Length: 447
Ligand SMILES: [Zn+2]
Image 1 (spheres, helix red, strand yellow):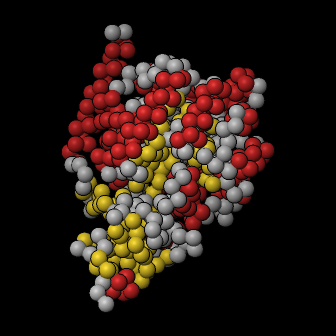
Image 2 (image 1 turned 135 degrees about the horizontal axis):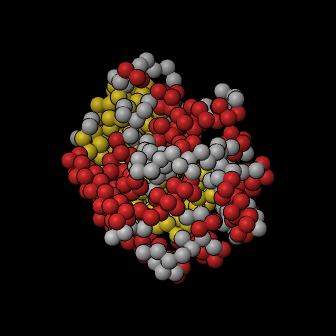
Image 3 (image 1 turned 180 degrees about the vertical axis):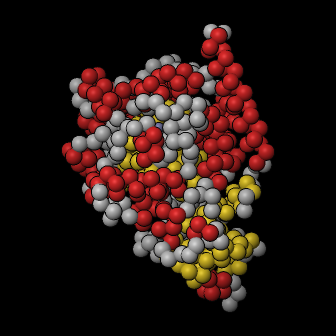
């Protein structure tokens, strides 16, 4: 019997499938056709069953599903290291928002390219973004080969992108329609900024739009005790109750941060079926507090991971986030068995796929989409290997990623981005730095 033709055949040393049984395969093959996984299994069987012109030797590699960053402000790479070591509201109101007001599509593009470059380099294949000019970010994601779920940030006051709520909702709908040309690779979400920067009408109508378009609805929630106090002052209740009353908690809801939660609020989130995006390094840097992730997991809440923007992290590297998530829960509960490596790896893969409503991502299984990365096991930091999931969470730093594919298309291989030149990123970096310097001079001189 002749072998069945497929587009690409991966020959992997170790595969962390992240499937239902969390199977780990040694000397394994993955057959891929039209961006989807045909089969995964023992190399001898797979190589007999399938043949491909494009056969990749990843025998010295640890192969796993591409990592998913469930909360970014991708183009905030423009402000990386611009203002550090400040409280959240001071940082936002006096440093970030004044600069963001001046951001234009050109700077969003330069900074976004750097963000995508960093994410690809460190094994992220998909990101969920909340920011400005998401039409530009859509083109960028497509141009770099990444998968993205993009939400234009919604605020309860006029911005340079819209002057009222109806215009803002129209903008999201038109972005949703325009993203259809990118197929399933670049999609849309609805992204109100937070309860304290919006209003009830915006929350309700934006949630109704997410229902109508059948896309995720994501919001910053309960990030600090200060936010809770502000919510009580403005609405007479804490943020989770406010969203619950507004009818905005459901499996469609992707709740970012969830640091300041009572036991009852954790129950409420669990009952609603909403997902939580934990951003441990941003929360630590801004001293926002520690999200009760262990308690949420006990209640079977779908917890995933995000980096937040590169201004509050200061990176977009999910490997660092995985390690921080595990360590932070252990030290806060004083229990080293909390948040084990496999649980944390699930957050960055399977759970994230579920949160974004894309269950065919996040695991290497037949019929799933072929978003796959590989880490070089010749890296001394990964030697020797006993438990692959432990290496991913505790030992790897992201620089070991040597191969990345999205929908079966290779986007990074051994130091080379296949969709753009590294020199383009250097040029982007120069242009951003020039712009920031010029804006700072302008604001100092009042010009
Ligand atoms: Zn954020």
